[in-house]
Amino acid sequence: MAPGSSSVFLTDLFRTAAFRLTLMALAAMAGVMVMQFGLVYTQMEAVESHRSTTLLRGEAELLARMTPEHLEYVIRKRATDDMRLVISSAGLFDASHALITGDLRVWPRGLKADGKPHNIEIYPEEGAPYPLRLLAVTLSDGNILVLGRSFHLLAEQKLMLRHATFLAAVPTLLFALLLGMVLSHRALSRVKDMHEAIDLIMAGDIHERLPAGKERDDLERLAGSVNRMLDRLESLMDGMREVGNDIAHDLRTPLSRVRAKLERALSTGSAGDALEGAVARAVDELDQCLGIITALLRIAEIESSRRRAGFGTVNLVELIADVVDLYEPIAETEGIHLLTQAGLAPVNIDGDRHLLIELLVNLVDNAIKFTPEGGHVTVAVTRQGGKASLSVTDTGIGIVPEERQAVLSRFYRSDKSRHVPGSGLGLSLVSAIAQLHDATVLVGEGKNGLGTCFRVTFS
Ligand code: ATP
Ligand code: MG
Image (cartoon, rainbow, N blue to C red; front, side):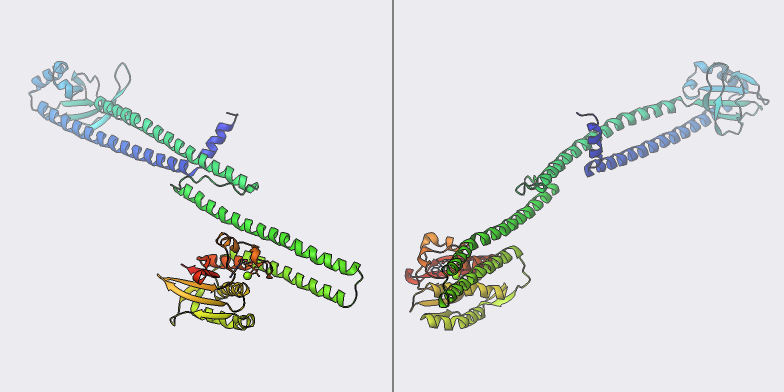
């Protein structure tokens, strides 16, 4: 361990919530123990004080009833008596406090012969002074009987209590402190792992994730939430990057083509109509480029926004009627029968009306574009098992099963349809809008295995 690292460890440890909680719990535990100890201590003192008063009083009463000669004898012989167990010192004094007999050599300083117990310090001729609980009563012959009880029993009990409390408290507090340190150390190392992961992410490694384990506790659940947020951010960033790449990539070819054509027109020195034709074609191609940029930005906007601000109740039956009205003239020009199939009852869903029109327009536009003259395009709305679905079925050139998933991706165009103008972004827009509505897009074949059927099912 490097010098100073242990103090850093301790500082870090102290800064963890778990360790601070442990310290607080420890302080509370210590407080309770001190309180308990104080309570038992004072209780013990009170019980012993009451007991010694009763004993002293009882003994004094017994002795006071004896004849003076007998009393003197008893006090003198007390050393060999049972009384020794209860009374540790005794003295018989005359009215002027001069000793008659007993082991109390002098009248204890400050003692009053009032029959009440007094705690008084005794100064023996040899040795250290010691406290006694003394009681003095005046006898009928004028002499004073002094009885004393030592505190050594109480002192012993107190010592035992102190030892017992210390023996119980020290290991308990130490164990709790150790446990707190271990738990805090664990928390600290987990947080340290997370800090390291965050540092990596900030350094640019956006694939890095926080250690979330199985999300069993609050810290892991928080890490899990942060990870999910990072996933979302990463996919948004990927989407943005993809859009940038797509735009750059897809515009290169048409732009180079326009440039080459214009250059050729200039260098051949073509004049008049030829130059005009070249410029007109260039404008068309540039329009297509602008269309691609608009479509890509629109898809990116829909994919990343997740905005549900424009959401409301949309009646799909009304929606298909509007789109069919819009496309009727175009279908007619192309020689295609455009039909609707829906019940009278409204089929309502929660969605963005403008986006849903965009979705349907793209599907109907494709159906008309990829269906030869004389074909049929049917737009239908159904509700099955509580789920609303929209379908556009045609009798056109169809999509082979292997390509049915691929057509939904960006720029994918089937070989069969290369001669038809388009950039391959319409269905990407459809799938982005469907995703925003939590809807699924299914590509299948039309009636009797002819043509194509696109079905969008809302959940
Ligand atoms: P854009 O819609 O961007 O103008 P596009 O129509 O070619 O161009 P998409 O709408 O994404 O692009 O469709 C992708 C491809 O899927 C089409 O090029 C075509 O090959 C195939 N496709 C889509 N709809 C149909 C359909 N109804 N019948 C047959 N093929 C289809
Ligand atoms: Mg299209």
